[in-house]
Image (cartoon, rainbow, N blue to C red):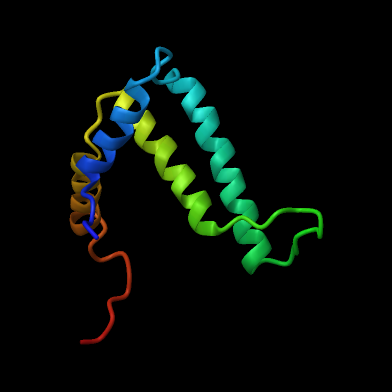
Length: 109
């Protein structure tokens, strides 16, 4: 199976969204949606690793699916703002590898 690049993920989401007249939601609406999806992810993680078991009436949802929902909305937000997520990732990694390079205890080699 072909591993998709982040650029390909962004293009796939854009192709999907572009088929609808409504297009992307406003950045503020997507931020609200991202917050909602993060809450659902937090709930799943709490059920799986925390002290709060699911009610018997709650349907089973995988953490993987919730992460996918977060990723989809995050890509929508980036696309709507014309942000290249590969470039954004490179900027953050550069920051971690320079400013924060001595912040954490490295493993012994």
